[in-house]
Length: 268
Picture: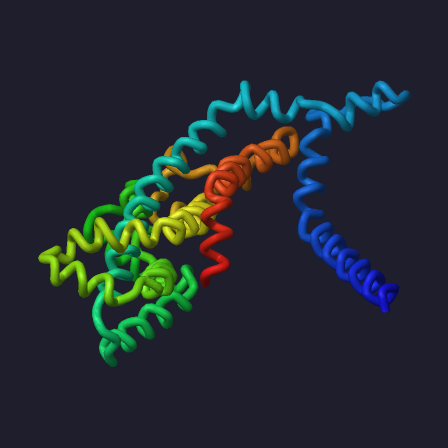
């Protein structure tokens, strides 16, 4: 019996390692290719092989000789930071409004509408968004992308799932003490949703960091394009290293939000 338990545990561990290796295989391949020399060298011995396949040349090109790369990097941040801030504001406000009262058919219907809207692919909404933004004269500006990305039905439903875990009696007690809705939202709902907000920031930032369609359709100005658009035109002399550097901010954000993220995932 003990032998069967050990063999079963070994099999589960082997499956986990196999699946983990399969998922990490593309990342490992890009990381390995980023260490190749950007200049083809004639390999005649071990030293030449090391210079060819263990070189920091691509990273030097990215870090010190690619001003266009860093311009697009800052363009990405100029889009992500305000869009993410507005997303947190609107998503938490809407979630609080949907969950602060007693459950009713109207509340259920509104939640179902958010669920249905969140199922729509981004590409379907590009044309109506373009028409609306064009009527407002925002096509060609960063504000067009910020506004489109700030209103996300999926994130409203996501925060609603978190906000409804707060006991309604807490809201009722605060109202009996004379607190207004804004004070309840700011002093009770927001602290209770803290870990969920960090998870929202992590998921939303990863999504916005990788957006491609919205900048191409709404900005239409290469000087304002984010890094995702710039990476597709990079050559192999620095493209692999550029992809690794591009992924580092999201990895850092995951490390910063890791504890709150794990706690909130366990509650969902």
